[in-house]
Figure 1 (cartoon, rainbow over the protein chains, first blue to last red):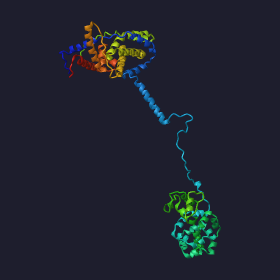
Figure 2 (figure 1 turned 180 degrees about the horizontal axis):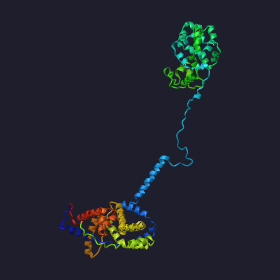
Figure 3 (figure 1 turned 90 degrees about the vertical axis):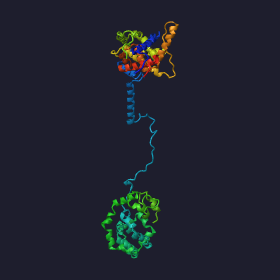
Length: 314
Length: 190
């Protein structure tokens, strides 16, 4: 509670009122009325103002006459939000002509992906054999490698008959049998490869057709391989009925199917899911390691393996 | 709060004809607005002068209040009294002027003069003290004191003019008077 000098609150308030009244009324400037009316006549007629303007004016008065009512602010906020939404979902307003391509993603070169049509599989039986899993297993066999490394066996391979026989996938399939591989490793068989009988047995039309393949000829042209074929043991084995039966076996026929050739071809074209690509990769060769290294054969239409084939010593 | 402090509304005339004048103005009779200006210019100018403490600012604020009232006369709600409405416009205009002032602006109390040189000197001194005390109040407190003592408005009319509840008006008026008593009469605040 306030403590006042006087003893009566009423008296104190009356004294304060007297002080305020002492200020008295102020006389308005003489030109106030004239100035107001001058401005009024230059102003838009009052009747032109709508009833809605009263509410806007009250908003204006409520916020201290800052000049912007709440409706105006909300209207601006709504317009800004609408503009942002339109820009987000439709992008900026479309530009006129002449601005196309001023800003855009760089066009980088992208090599076309290999398609099945890019892989040409010749109907040649020799190619089918060379691209089969049978040949793959045969060529990895240690006995076969030793046989192929034998000079006499390679000389036997140089004969025309034997080249014809090798061109036959059936005979190649038979070569994958353990018995034959064991026989081929013997000196007797290598000796037999140079015999006329063997050459006669190998002189079938199919083998001659196989030998017409330039790829097979490239393989057989290797001196070491040709000398291995000259082994009499191989010639004897090739002339045996077992060899003939093996050549006619269903498994050998299955290896000639185009699907097997296509699988091989795809592996050649760097399909990394093949198991054969993992173990014997040539240094610096990322494409077809074991084929590049061992076959010395280049598939027609397959550009990936060519450099590896030519670089691989046989 | 003492109840017998209502001042006599000596500055403005009765407003029973205000609505008629407004309708005439809205019908295109601009000269009718001149009657309204003549009726309220003195009290409005007094309020502006006590609020602002400067003759030029008070004159500009009063003129602006009249012109704005004319511009928005069609939106005037007849359920309110015209003077409450135009007081509201004027008070808000005065508050805008106060807010726009720089802190270094000095206010020279404007005082009425009457009587002889000695009486005039004493009166001027006393009036200067009262005006200075008014200007020390916050604008909100100053507004209620000015409207109460220099415009003679009731609590409800002040509430309409200030846009605040009547209870707020009473509270502000009490606090403002207490502050004036401390400044002018040496009342001691507890």
